Image (cartoon, rainbow, N blue to C red; front, side, top):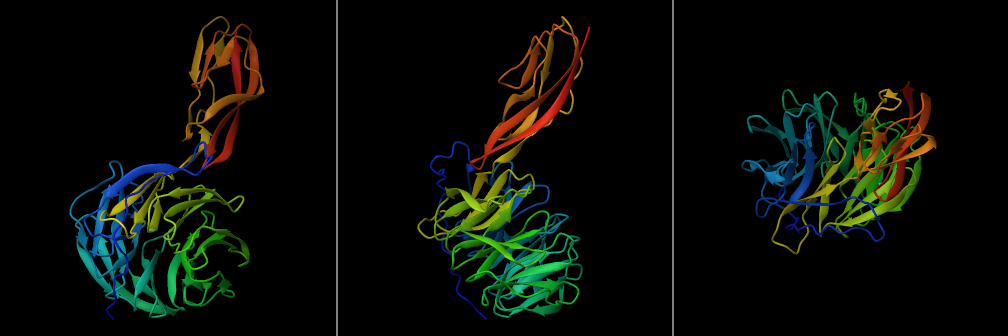
Length: 412
């Protein structure tokens, strides 16, 4: 069945911060894609070195080197109207769901060779098993989920669904979560036979993007027509909360540490940050019309967003700096000696860069903690001195700190 490509040209990222956010996720620039690309989906390689975009209007995949934010090599020709895109767990193969010719394209990353796999009518979503052996494809008009053997590049069976779009898989590979756009539900399927597990979960109008928390305890779903992010307890199927993220949302991803969920809204052109602890929006970052596909790199410090809104002749991939939690990476302190100069740098990580403070106990007399995280001075008294150091910053606008206890031995 032939269909009309509805995605228009992309708009250049603007990158503005929410009012009052002292520290927050921020625009890190854009990647210019081939003319007329209309990027739809985004996926990042397991090592974080490359991002791949499915270019809906040109039937291609662009490869972006994430260290430079530049497209490398020529675009790779795939099937008609590629939408969802995913990378195999070992990083060797990239898959696209091609809406207008009912295929999946499998790209060999090393050789750029492309294999075409026939699936159902209007393939629109992709998930892959943790071992990479099985690919699952939602077929919206076909009302099925295709099960594909990746070794033989063949569809082996199908599972029933109702206008399915989004799909994700549990960390152990045993359960599929399928967003039934036409039924306003998410169903949970056993991968062994496609049997439904529990009752359908009512999400709201038009479930689109789906994501699981890193520990698998929460399912996040976007209700496309309601403009809501819905949080579900995966153990019970209960809806725990809903929060407004904007109409026409598709891109959805949880940070690797599970503290935040990011969602796109094509209607508003924003990337929306939601705290998983409070289920509240902490930031709305303006990117431009048509904020669509979304991926977060394995390190959790960059988000990549496909922009395909009308109003510009520029096609781009927005790159957003994602705040990361503070951490004190120094584990212990070397001994000091009375009357001898002592200098140790307390190493920290996190973005924005955390500040350090002594929050419990006291440093040995003669030592101080400098603004750049150095313990320095000349101790005047021997003994064992226990104290707590705390690293603090604002992560996506949320005050966050972490503490670590140290003991410093000062010898005579």
